[in-house]
Image (cartoon, rainbow, N blue to C red; front, top):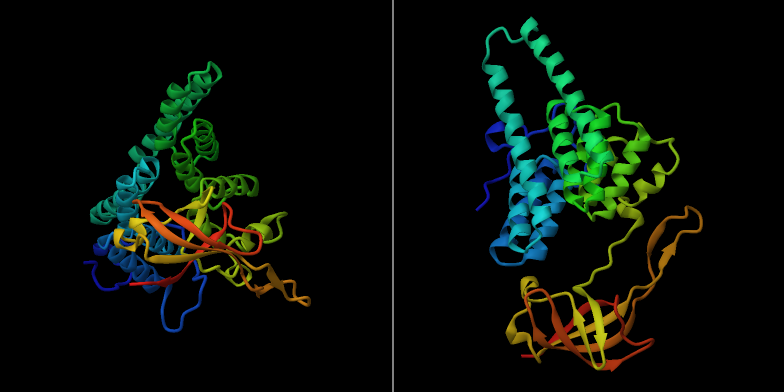
Length: 353
């Protein structure tokens, strides 16, 4: 079981903030409860859900924890484990690389603090830094040459080497991120976009490109803390307010739903909830659902903000007939209004035992 909540600054718990990167502000104010405490609570909910086999709930909780504290190592670890077990290997690799990165950061910090007189720069260190910079440039130029010749895999190898030697070089990071994106390795691409976006002198053009890629990769939880940290810096730049609105919880009231209709076939529908979401085989021919279309947003005419939604419109009464691991089949018992179709949301109506 996960331990009790502790301060994230304690290295023994391996919960640390990156140098020069402040922890994001809480998006939902909670009295007498810090962002760190909220992150730990979300992680513990995720761990508990994982142990009970509720993988979707566990994923949501782990992601919530990482939105509040992006450097929470154990949340990265268990989210990676969950993704591996569900076959999402690229996403698993992303989070386990984060574990390795944070562990390496902690190790290097401990080593530095253990060395006497480490406050003073040494000539050998200066020469080593210059050598690394020159070697990184050669590797980058070789990577670009291979890229021009169409050798994508070879180019990736050389660009990764350049970034490992000079991890704060904007050109190296964004070039590697773009190459990985074009190769279809979206989670790996997001990792290097994130490494670029945390740099204090990142340009708005590069920042916006990275954030948009995170949205497209459905990894907006990686973008969330970066956007919070740069709200003042990029406040007056075109399009930044629209980016922020995607994370404005007050302007995007949540729609409560158990799942969604994936497809319709004659008198039955397939829905995206199954055993991993808590539905059991005993629910076949006993669990009744209702599909619905969310009501339209209600907008305050004075402020222009979304303050709620109109009533949802039911489209059908359904009954679960077959439960699979990640999906279920349901019989259409009665249709209302426009009728049920793919994209309609699902709510549990009642259970008959």
